[in-house]
Structure formats: C-alpha cells, structure tokens
Length: 489
Length: 135
Image (tube, rainbow over all chains, first blue to last red; front, side):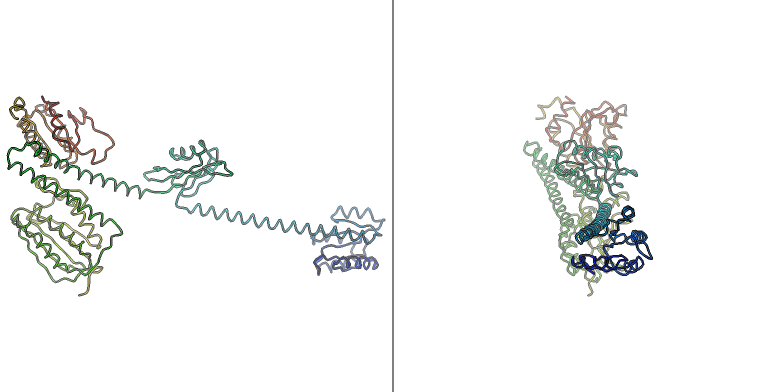
C-alpha cells in the first residue's frame, strides 16, 4: 500500500504491463499488474486500488465487462482505458460509460505519467469531496441536535416565551406560553393580534417593532385571575430589529402577597389615624378651654391618655408581629419552666386584676419542661391573661391550668367575662378584628393580641381552641406538642 | 359663650357612632357651641332616639357593629314618614380603610344623606358642615 496511490495495470501484453510498472514505480506509486480481466478482478477484490489502467482487449473477461463491474462494485476506483488505434471508438464508448480517461497505444512515459497523475488527482478530489460531504452531514446533524436541545430547553422553561418577527407574526412559542395565553394549535406564522388575546402584551411587542427601540421593558399583565410579569425585548440582528421576544413570569403569589401587605398597611394606617384624630380632638377641647370644669378637663385628659396608651400597645403589637414575620428571627429555644413563668406573669398583673376585684386562681401540675423562646411564651400568656382581665366582669374570676393532655402540654385560661358571640369565634384571631357590641364598646384594644397568640402557637406547631363557659365567659386552650418541643426531665 | 350662640340653643343633634370617644368629644364640643346633643352607640337605638327626640340633624357613622350599618340606618330614616326630612351628615373612615377607588357622593336612592364626610374630622370642620345645614 502506498500513500501516493495504488495502481493496477491490466493488459495481456506483458511488455506493456512491465513498462508501465517501471515508469509508475519511479513516480513513487505502488504498482501491480494483471494479465487478464479475471486476475484483475481477483486482485481488486483482495487489495485496495486507487486507479486501474485497463486494456479493452483482454482474454477471459473483456475490458468493457471489467469496466462495467468496476463501475458498479468499486465506484471509488478511477478507471483509465488503454487502447490501440483500432479500438479507439470503443475507448470513446468506454469513457462514455464511465471510464475516466483513456491513453492510446503506443504512449510515451510522459503521457502515461500525465494520465495517471490526472486520474489520481481526480480520485483525491472525489475522496475529499466525500469527506467534506460527510463532515457537512455530521455538522447538520449536530446543528439539528442543538436545535432540538434548545427547543427542549425553551419548552421546559416555566416562564412563557413568545417570539414574533418584524411583521408581528408569531415565529416561536413554548409550552408555558401556550398555556398562559391559551393559544390554539398552530399559531405559527399567524399575526399575534389574531392569536394572542391579551392587548397589553401585543401592544408591548408592537411598540418595540414600531418604535424600533432597542430597549427591553417590563409590565405586569393579568390573565384569567393570575398576574404575570411580561418582559418585552427586541430581537436585534446586525444592529437591526428583526423581531421581538416576550417572556411571561407568573407572579400571582407575589402579587397576592404584596396585596395582602398593602391591605394590612392600609388597616394599620387606619388603626393609627383614628385614635390620633380622637387625641387631637381632646387636645383641642382643652386648648380652646371648652371643658366645663376641672373634673371634665381631667376626664378628657384621662380618655386621651387611654387612646395614646392603646396606640402605643398597637405599635408594640406591630413590632411583635414584624418580629415573627421576619424569617431571620432567631428564636432562642431553651427549656422553659412553664409554671414558673405563668406565676411571674400573674404576679405582674395582680394589681390590674385587683382593680376590677378579679380573683386569679392558678392550678399547676408538674409538667415536663418545654423548648421555647422565653419571649414567645411570655407574649402568648400575657395576651391571654390581659384579655381575661379586660373582658371580665367586676368581681369575676380567672382560672389558669397547666397540665399534660395526651401528647400535648395544655395551657388553659378560663374567665367569667362577657364571652365571645359564636359568630365571632372564627374571626377573633384575625388581625384587627374586634367584637363590636354594647359590652366591648368601652374596652380599649388593638385587635392584634390574639393574632399574635395564634402566630406563636403556630410557630410551635401547636393548636389553640376557644370555648364558652356555660355560665358566661371564655375558655382559651393552648396545646403545645411535647413530641417536638418537650424536654425529658 | 352659650349666650352668644343663644339662638341655636334649641337645635338638637343626634350623634350615632360606636366610638365612645368620638361621641364624647363631639358632644362636649357641640354642647359648648350651644347645641343639644343626643347620643347613641348603635343604629337601631339611634332610630328609636330619632323618633323620640325629633332632632334637627343626624350625624351618622357607617361602620358600626356591621360594616354598612350606617347605610341601612340612613335608608330607614328616609323611609320613615316622620323622620325623612331630618338632614343627615354621614361620617366614615371606610374609604381610606378599605382603599376604595371611588368616592361616595350622596345619592337619593342608595345613599340618601345630605353630606358625606371622611373621618378623622376636626371639631371645627364638623361644626362648619353642621352650620351649613342647620342655621
């Protein structure tokens, strides 16, 4: 085998074969010879040749037949016909049928070299062409694979993607976009205004195409009760806008969250504004000297003070809520001796209870310590106890129990107060909800106490229950699972 | 002071609002301006007191034990042959609180009041509005 080329010379005249071999060997080629068509066939089947020189007049298998066979079974081999004058016509026929070239006998070594060189060059060209074609096919396959991959990626995206061309026709969209925009089948090549039912979105894209602005912009759009952040950007190629692409991000949750926050802020503003208005009014009464006498002046100041106090309590409650909302809040979980804390808090509120002549009974069983943040448990119990005093009747009583109940630690606060109407029981834990009736009218409150209690209970995966006492009054029961937060004593 | 406003001494104002401080505050103030002030902390009682006292003006809150209690009371007052000529000033914090996009305008069919004002309102401003209606 030879890198420059392998040549087979087929001729029944040995002198021709040998002559050719000698000349071509000098060219640095590998050369073999065959004296008839059959031998040539055998050799071609055994070895690899690039070029075959064939005499048309051969014994056994004729040159034409050999050429024919070559053409069908070894099209890569370049056939060159050797011919004498008498068979010149058949040489022309052979060329017509697929021989690449011919060389008439007798020929000079120069003519032979020239024909063979030309033939081999052709062979290399064909080979190169094949290689290029293969490479191109491989590249095309890669590209189509890449395209498929890209398409899969775009289709797997959670965000919707919609692309339109310069004339506003849809050229690409993914599954999410189809779902979000409720697109019918086969929207490709259709004007987006026909298939996209959201005017805001189509206007966004159109404005990019019309104004030829190379700037992306975003806008919130609403489809079927959901909110999306639509981002429109121009598709720029070679400095020219050739289309526009929109991405749609579902921000429904964020929108709801933000709306809740706004509503809350709104409520807070109201809850602050009203008492401030009242306090201002009271101060006006005093400034203008409107009070009838000193007793009324004092009454006015006392009332203003209660509202100011409630306002401060509101701010404290809001700060507590904010503390609980913040994910960053680090609770310091320590084994808490609940009975001890209860007794401390009760002691703190002793004077307030005595003002209304309320008896506070504490019944404490020995219970396991529980892992809690001290601030949380104090805040929780303080709110329950304050309510039990605030909404109690004069001369009433409060019973506080702590005991193990099944898997939970139960803290129960019973009062003999005004109770909670059944229709309000669900709502008393809502922010700013207060029972409004004759009995509660004069009792100041922020409407946040129980919502703080509920949040704390939730933090410790507990439960809170409210019941009414038969003789009037409320029972608040807090259950804290010992399984999660109990501590072995 | 009362003598100066002597001619207004007969005028009766019925104040219906469940905020005890708002009621107290305005009662003290309006009394000092020579009005007779009758108070009620809820709508139904307010209607009863309107029948008993025949006030010259009703000042009515919207959100009491129910969100729209004031609206219902206003309509009931207007539907009552004995009471339907009493002017009503309606006060509310409802718009600011609920962040409603529209403003209320008094309307004969669904909001039959003479004046619709937002809370909080200063003593002087309320007095000014009262004087516009009852001289």
